[in-house]
Image 1 (cartoon, one colour):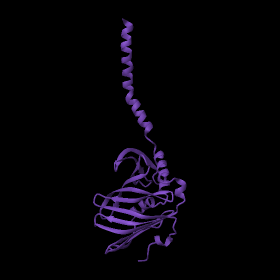
Image 2 (tube, one colour):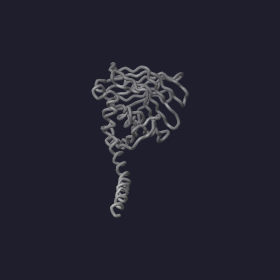
Image 3 (cartoon, one colour):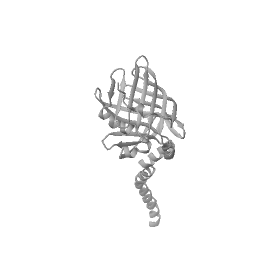
Image 4 (cartoon, one colour):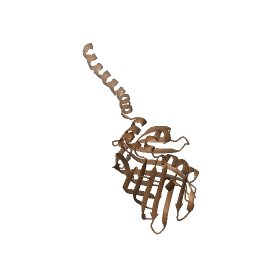
Length: 252
C-alpha cells in the first residue's frame, strides 16, 4: 500500500521541517520585536513631554534634600540649571557649611569646608560637558555618537532596555530605559578620582513629576560601592530667571 505509506511519511516530513525552522522563526520574531536605539531614544523624548515642550524650557530650579549614607546626614539642597549648559548645586551640611559644585559652560569649580575653593579637574570637566547639557535628552546621539542596544535588565522589578553609549573621547555609559514608560531609570558609568582611582557610579531616576508638560525625576540616587547620595526634590520650577553670575567662580 504505497499510497498509505506516503500519507504517513509526508506529515512526518512536514513536522520535521517545521521543527527545523522553528529556531529560525523564533530568532526572526525576536529580531523584529527588538526596537532600534532610535526607537528607544524617540520613546524617551516623547515620554518626558516631547521635543517642543522640552525646547520651551530654558532654566530649572530644584529644591529639596540630600541624604548622605556615608555621613548619615540629611541636608537642604538646591540645584540651578540654565540653557545651554550651566549647572550649580548648593548643599547646606549641618554644622559644617556649604558644599558647592558648578559648571559655567566652559569651566567648573567647587567649594567645600574641607578643601575650600578649587577648580574642577580635566576628567570631571569632560564629564560635565555631557552631564550638564541642558537639552541632554534631545542630544544624546550627539553626546554619544556610538550607541548600541545591549539587551534588557531588571530595574526595580521592571524591564529596561540597556543602551551602551560611547562618547567621542572614549567615555562609556550604560543607559537603562523602562520598556513600558520609555523613561530613563538608570545610568552606569565610571569616574576617575585622584584620591580613590576609578569609581563605579550607578544613578537611579525615580518619581518623575510633570512640571509644565515636562517630566522631571524628583528622586535621584547616586550610588557607589561604598556610599549613596539621595536627592529628594519637593519643589521644581522652570523658566525662572537665574543670573549667570551664580555659575561663576567666586574670588574666594
